[in-house]
Length: 121
Image 1 (spheres, rainbow, N blue to C red):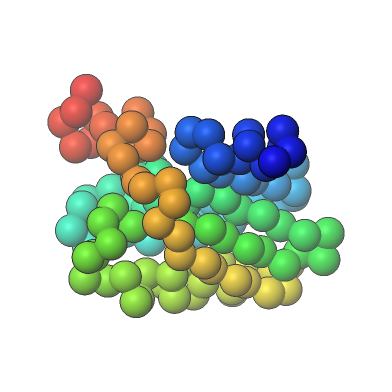
Image 2: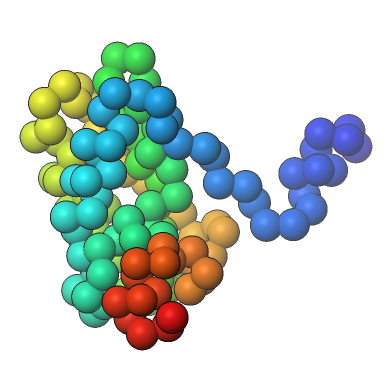
């Protein structure tokens, strides 16, 4: 077993960093903030459901997201809502939204704004 492989087995899987330096990044984040979990009055970005926003040099957007629970009643719909929010943005060429359950979502992933809104601060 190589050291690189053994490092990947320890701890919670890492979330790939987002393309924060891409010119479209802030616009894509704003689009994600327009999507809400129907059961929680906070947008999915501030809830911490968006794990990665990767934007290629060709302006193809790839989003990796999760849900608050695997049994979420909108599990089949929410990735489509995210894609629909991002697709019309000027400059975006393609959108791919993938759902993951690793690492599992937890309340510690929420932004301070979301915690305040929900009364956790």
